[in-house]
Image (cartoon, rainbow, N blue to C red):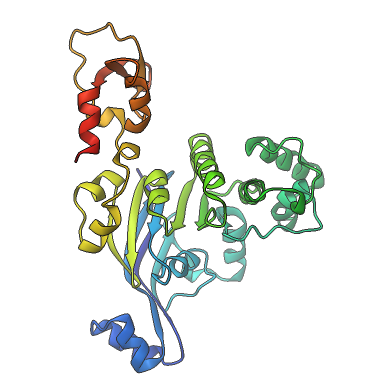
Length: 336
């Protein structure tokens, strides 16, 4: 799949004595050493990576790892010290003011942890806000906002104010507002971390549902390992301004690059990572399955089917039988 975003040798240093901090960084000094000597913070340290079109990439790390600083470089809220950021093969760090404004209005949208809704505006008016900034016609704004209300499941709440909504509903408004301009790229900075656990799970599922429909390119920041593994097509683990490992959830679980990552992933529920298609046995001549699951069904969900049946057929995208899964093969996932 074609690269949508390509980041090359990105460095971001905060502080007064940036030249001295940069030299120490090039000499291999740690964040702590640089901070102690120069009072500067090397938030992003020579990072290179790419994001493919329609991919949901998660950047995972603890507080202070540099993940939010990196994300804000991708729409130039932070100006990198050095490096290149290519979006659609154009280096956005060379954009002049008009190009950058168009990039922020048309190509990217950002969703923050804080909902950032305008308290005196209704749900519909909040969703329209970005279109209003882009000077879209009133009727066009209204029609698009109503489409977004339906898309995120807020029908009937159009004329309510933010204070009348739950946290999850407010974040749906924020997501709808970000999607209203039909951006190619969504930048999501810990958008669900302020929500209660149940609402957070609902919003995670909602994001996956929307991605199935809209197929955006998404970079999602989180410090929650379960969230990272639930959402990410690929995950980049970040520590002290650097990527320690990038890979699919399965690649990371099966081959953690460092002890730091191994410690993070040790208690992950593997039933949510592995899919029926990952462990399906050849169907051979069997056609007598009483139940079936899709190739993409998680093993955790398959277990509820296998509580009633000894095995289940596994079907592909077009409904064709591609294999089967039984209790023995499913249970092996949890014992790895």
